[in-house]
Image (cartoon, rainbow over all chains, first blue to last red; front, side, top):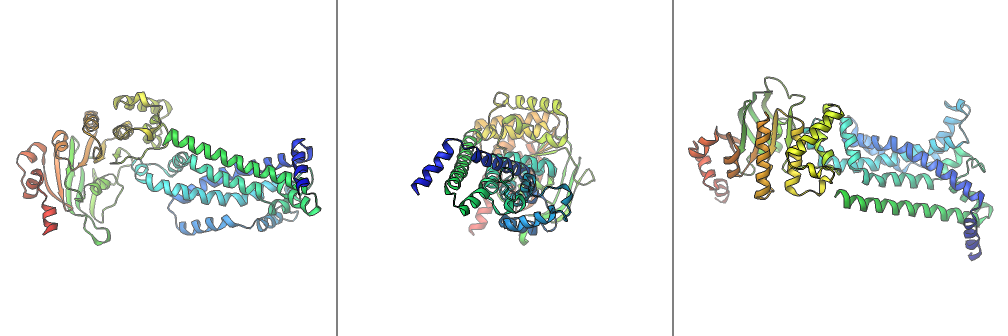
Amino acid sequence: MLDTFLEALSLLGRLDEHVLAIVWLSFKVGLSTVTLATLIGLPLGALVAVASFPGRSIATVVLNGMMGLPSVVVGVIIYLILSRSGPLGGFGLLYSPPAMILAQTVLVVPLMAALTRQIIEDAWREYANEFRSMRFSLRHTIVSLLYDCRFSLVVAVLAGMGRSLSEVGAVMIVGGNIEGFTRTMTTAIALETAKGDLPLSLALGMVLLSVVLVLNAGAYNLRQWAMRKYG
Amino acid sequence: MFPIKLSQVGFTPDGRSVLAGVDLEIDVDGITVILGPNGAGKTILLRMLAGLQAPHGGTIRWNGNGLPAAGIAMVFQHPVLLRSSVFHNAGLGLQPLALGRAETLRRTQHTLERVGLAHRAADSARLLSGGERQRLALARAWAMQPKLLLLDEPTAALDPSATESVERIIREIRSDGARIVMTTHNLGQAMRIADDIVFLASGRVIERAPASRFFARPQTNEAKLFIQGELPWRIAFDD
């Protein structure tokens, strides 16, 4: 076990090209997913939090329920949509990074929207009278609340990033785990462990854990700074 | 917008009467102070004038029409400020007005100067003192150039010095042409600032009079007792 650990450290220490390529692709897919999911999930969550419409309670329950969407199910559905006979088959996206981004976005948007809804709803209780007295439109209300809660919403974005980086089922199905093209840290860990290449799995696992720790430390420091600056 | 007419306005949440049969007319000029003990229904009446609360009975008409789309601003007892700069908060009420960037900046800067907070424009609004927060809330409302400014106990939590600053700003806003309706249970403040008084108790308008007459010769027993600092409502409760 110690040998495996040392070999993993060695892989990281000598900046193994194979490892770097996998890490780089994981970041590209993860960041693209989080960017898309932020643009969709945050306004969607805020809309459900402040808008009055029939079925709002149902929308909230559905949104919360979709946080636990099984990734393999999403993978299969996106696979069917992108496969040659599917409605988007003509784009030839299956087994490509864009397919992985699409699948992960479907998984991450509900998570970010549900967390955003909770954060914005709490803020809305505080601001409703002020904003209504200023005749804020729905758009102004959502923009202002998202702005005001920006430091709290970092948690939602981080949760999305965490889910995206740690997700394996959907990207395996729609990406195909093709070496040098669609192999991410999680799919590589699953494959290499099965093959018995434990040092590579462990090295990628260490990168994954480090990323999660760095992101959380960054978010913590950001919140502390925001508390000092804005109260 | 004026006159604003309230006819037989009632408010009965959960069957409990908070306002009952309120008839009131608010004309175009001056500062009206809605005076009364806690629980008299002052705040709910103000919220109705702002269009934040619909009455459960009776009608409110703004110059014979429904609630105007613009021209009303309200400052709350505990104003909520965004986690951003003083300047951003002061200009917040201008966003829905779509005035353009230059006019928005000009008005915001101007009102901050008038409330004495221009030097703190870049500071975080949530780190201001209570008096400064209330002045910022007034600046936010003033920048909107409202025809009707509603103030809900704007100095309830302030010390005498901060209260004096807020009262000076209220007079300046009035001089700028805004009609002001404010609530308070502070008799001294009502004497200093009011042109006319609406005395409210137990959800009913007990007396309406010019401020000088109200304090010199109150027409009702309830108003006399209130001015003398008696607590008839408490006595009734104890009995």
